[in-house]
Image (cartoon, rainbow, N blue to C red; front, side, top):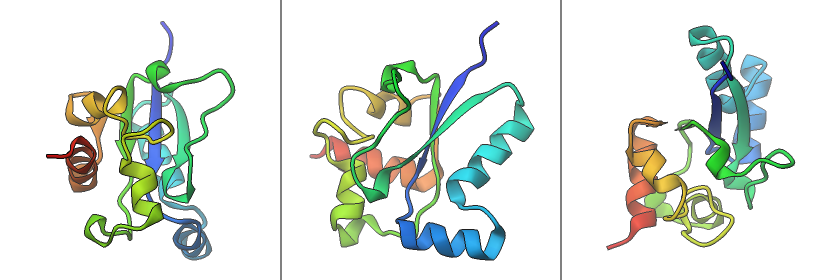
Length: 127
């Protein structure tokens, strides 16, 4: 049996992640990964830093290769907008919340991420 591949979308900018790492020894993406590994040690987990710009996946891996998606909490507020927010919800190519790929995972059973997941998915979907 092949281990499930999970995508963790860290929604914090580099400055916030650095403060987390200084205080805790790890940032929110790594923290989510650790919790998931405690639940199921065999998971293959990749972390993307969506607030920093275009999402970069491991070589040879695309969105369709993931069995599930989770989003960390974020110090950002969707209503404030700005590039770090738009990098995550812009429905064009390169965004983690493109309508044609991840949105269904974010809204479906394979997605997890509390209120940020719902807010990002709704903003990406538009009116």
